[in-house]
Image (tube, rainbow, N blue to C red; front, side, top):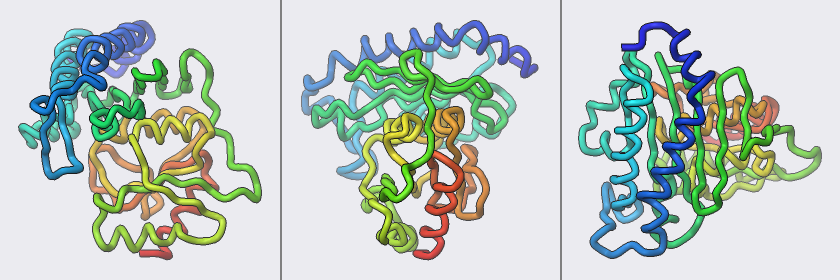
Length: 281
């Protein structure tokens, strides 16, 4: 078991390219050959018609679970599909061992419908702190990498989230109504006001990347699944942005957050979104 943070720091100093290679190979081997080629028997529903899983999700997660575990001995993997099969495996986020958090295909609905707006998300965390993340959009061949304290890059170029232009409506991606409670719907209604332009989100990972690139001002999300948020939240942080829950505290990947929460290009935007969400609650 890895017992010292220095060991992980050393890993991140020398082995991030190995993780990048694993993410790219998982996509090339298990995801992209099935893109726009899925047969009906390769698609299943989980909780309902909007919650889909495909053979690409399952096989890419299996691939990454095997490779990432070998790259960092003593680590464990919390993957979306494995947790669906065994919910107790999510508890590894609370443990001492380094955890790989994996969403093999974030934006499965888009993937199923032949839309390139999906990505593979991998994050490395320990004791609830996200240390590094990889966001790969294989249909666009875009890879964003963030390492805590070392910044964020997209295809090798530094990512600066910046701040919204004064006087322009804030563009905010929000949870889809199908995935919100009545209380959360009321909170999100607070964004329907002058100076804000809300829209339903697509792939969470790509929405976070859009914030880090300065193309989207904020998100307002109402669910906690770590595989959807861990990679993107670090990406936003390392690009200069921030994230806050309704209590004013940063989002915790281990859970127990007051929802909805926001991630934004800068602190002022995050506070503005929180004010509107609180007013709508």
